[in-house]
Length: 430
Image (cartoon, rainbow, N blue to C red; front, side):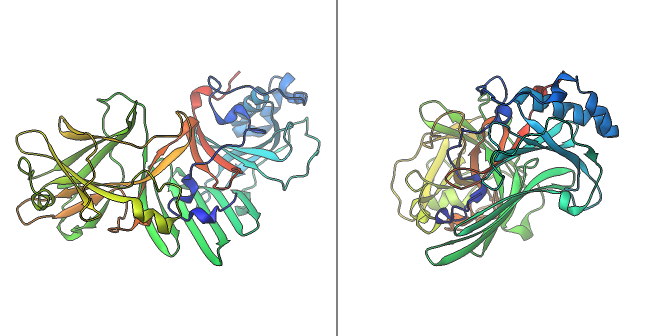
């Protein structure tokens, strides 16, 4: 998994890349949308034995039966299965390693965190010997729980070392990543962890650390309930009385023809909206939302150059109805405002961010903020979707489009590692 150091560390595990399709199996996407690939290798012997080998797994027989179903449905072979210690205690989780006879340098891991939470991790690398014969019989099930049986996917190459590891935190699967990359006579160490149940995590790169939420781009009805992402108090923590005092809700959806639609709403114990047509000073002193984002034009630049496109937009529901808005950062910006409208108790914006094409992996740096003001004294509390530092693009969170349950993709020119959450409904079952 190449570090892609020239791109730096906004959210290295979430960079947009083109998937190598030559050896990828349909297990990565639901069967209804996945093209079937022809397999030259014959089906393993156990596919014709109606899963009788699953009984050898003892109390894990149900898990093993489902793994056999997946392997036989997708033309894979089972190399190993065991209980993996993925957490910090003694709790272990059933896991399996599967190989691809049509591509001997690719293999998969299936993990069941809970009955309704299945994950797949794939590794495409040149480390595995080409031409190695695929096993046709089921391996014995191992109950070994030693630390080295956790699931770690790594890759190395000229100038980089990168690793992604599956870990369970409080019963939820997290993806832990670390890489070391050298480029332009500079070495960067990136570390990070993403909890894909709470859609939040942390990362550290170039000596800067941040916590952030992931806002998923979701194709849902306009009136869908707004999400309550994990947030941080970035200003006025001593005055914040809890979520009843000030809290933020956000939903991000694709919008045909204009890019994406962002809806923002707040919980506020004492509303203090700006008046109609406020000055910039009056707008900032009242209750309002702030959007920090890298405006189109700098998405592919290195981190030190992305600041040239960093924008801060303030928007609010004004007294008497309607909305108020103004560019705040950089100072003196006079560009046209994007379309903004009131939508009940929410503010709705159309932003010109366009995924490369529907159904593909895509992301933009983005942080949403609710600025709470209870009087004319001005900003009291800032509630944000990342540990935002003013004017620092590396402290932004992210909006992500994730096709087919994708949760991790390595950042090399040809991605070698992917991690997805599987939908229980389409895991094959006989």
